[in-house]
Image: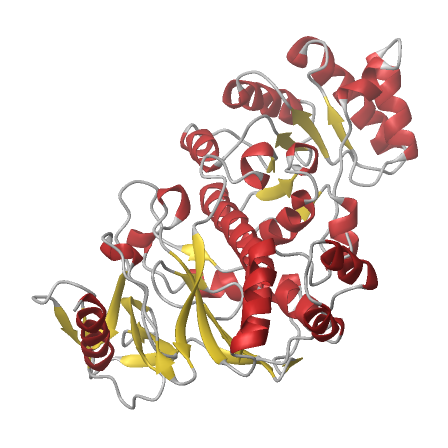
Length: 465
């Protein structure tokens, strides 16, 4: 899909037209963040930044976009502005792949308010989805431990969302994808096995296996559950594996796609080992997720490769990340959004976020949000509870928001999916295990500097009076 600046909601453009008339030179700061970790997780994995930067670098309205907007009644003078539209602002962001938490800025846009408004939907669309899927993938990786993880979700994905899901899955720790286009574009290892239809197209399963192994001997995986897993499929696979050995090849694995995966994998492993095929791997699929994989490992199922599809690429059961994009400063004046729900009260000012590290370099369990112009932050306060503060004066503080785009041009070097994935794992290694567990994980603390909290409270009182 060719993404142009029309990849947005209509209200972004209608607001932009009013800005164009009333405040064309207004300078805005917007924060991107989300309010809850998905899946009941204790953390999330930030993903999608590289795609956003690549798109913004050349974002414009096409001639057909302008023609369509003219039909929608937009004024000619505004349309002339849109013909020359480009993003010329600054973006400061957490590194893609980092471990992130709710209710603190993850990315900050500083730009002309028209530019900042027009890119909102695009930014939310990409970052929300990829962060959701990368987080799901990370949880699956945590369950799978050292097993190989294969993304097999394209056919079950939400249309072209499967393309970005494969990228996000690789960032979250998956080893390969069945998605050919995503593998090609993002340099992700591609992997494929076979479908039941291939075997059904033959009168005899053994001949189907033989043809496949002869023509595609490298990384050959035979699907053994089309008719009878243990009585027909497995013996046929062993026969072909032995024939491959005689030709100097080796069968990579067998795949189980139905039934009791723990029971069948144990039985299959025992039969393969008796046949001297210790090297043949067991691949399983069929509605897997982090909970099912955790259960299989707890049952000591001898599984080497997990193929995960629907539950990965659709982000089941959450389906969406509640990421938002809120104005925090306009023409150097702080802005705030109030709500009767305190979690929805936004944070004013251009800000920096600091991660606390302990003496061993591990995450301390707290991020502090401060006004960007502040100096040393020595105390972190609970956003709303006046009785809770943490002295952070002796802790090492890592600033998280880095300049990645300046005046509409990338200033941060591009990073590959592999580099981002490795970085993500290195950051997860610094997160204590209490935050990674699936049930009742510790809550990572997000606090405010004393100055930011006081200034926010002043704004709240000002707007309520």
